[in-house]
Every structure is written in C-alpha cells, then in structure tokens.
Amino acid sequence: MAEVITDAPLSVKTKAVDMLECYLIDADVKRMDDDLKYCQGSIRYGFDISSSIKTTFLLFEDNRSAQDTVDKLNLMNHPSIMRSLGDVICFDQHLPNHVLPFPYFDTTYADYLDKKSNKTFEFKRFTPEFIQLTSQVVHGMSALQEKGFCCPNLEGKDIFKENNCISAKIWHFCICTGCTGVSCTHCR
Image (cartoon, rainbow, N blue to C red; front, side):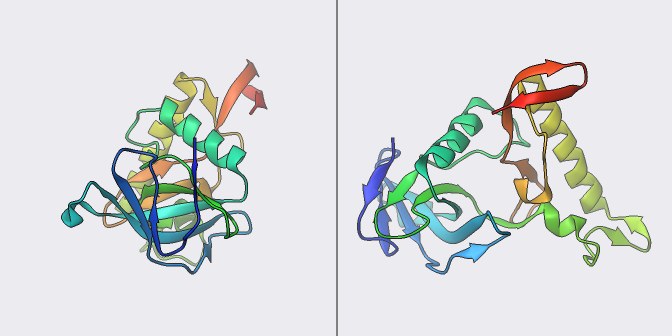
C-alpha cells in the first residue's frame, strides 16, 4: 500500500520498505514520450548516507496503474526484467502523483532504434552493444512467456538501459489470460 507524502518534492520519506528514504533531486519532470514521465533522485536505506542509490522515479497519474506495474514486476525474478526499488510512493499535491522507484537508467531501447542514432550502426553493421542489448531483450521476453506474461505491444520505451553498463531490462508487460496458437489476444 502506498503512503501519502505531503512535503514533496523536497526530502521525501516513505515506509514502503523499513527505514527507506527517497529524495527527489530533480523536481523537473521529463518526458520520454506522451505517456511516460520520470524524474531523478536517490534512495537511501537506513541512516548511512553512503548507502544512497541513484534512482529514476517513473511517474504515474493513477495508483492502479502504478500498483499493477509493481505487482507484475514483483512476480518476476530475471536479470532482463526490471526490479522496483520499493513500493509506490504517493504525493498529494503534485501531478502525476504516484511514483515508482527504479535503478537509475540513462536511456531506453528506443534510443537505439532511432534511425538517427549512432548507437545501433557503426560502419554499416550493428554495434556489439546493440547486439548484446537485443539478446537480453529476447531472453527477457522468453522468461516472461514461460511465466505466463506477454509483450503484445512491446516498444523501445518499455525497455530501460541501465546507466554505465550494457544491461537491458523490460519493465512493461501484460499478464496473458488466454492464448490460441501463436497469437496472444487476451492480455491485462
């Protein structure tokens, strides 16, 4: 269950995890696209300042979609599936007001799919980084399918690339409620 925080976006505290403190460093909300908004910050467990983790907070307009996302992510334990750093944090004065903390990411897979990007092609060949990220996405999709999940409309924005490493993680997927043959038509 999310806790309402009234003094955001400055020093923000929540009890989503024992002794967890969240700090929104960047009150400026950024857009990845029309639907996806985020801001930067850090999470600290306990009183030790050195235990701070740089964090990206995804912003949701309603608690249900945020809670559904964290519930699905918590059902998976795979290196190519994103894990949340805590539960949903709510602000009562700011929109969008439901925040989900993730490990810091610097880009999405969409940046690699952009035709103008030099991250995908080098000397008319796929870069080793792009090949490795694509392999991780395929492994993640395979793991999701084995557990009864699907990605019917998977887009580049649904895959984060963690900062300072070659690690792609899927964060947006559906529970498959009924598949016939190779097409999955019932997702929620």
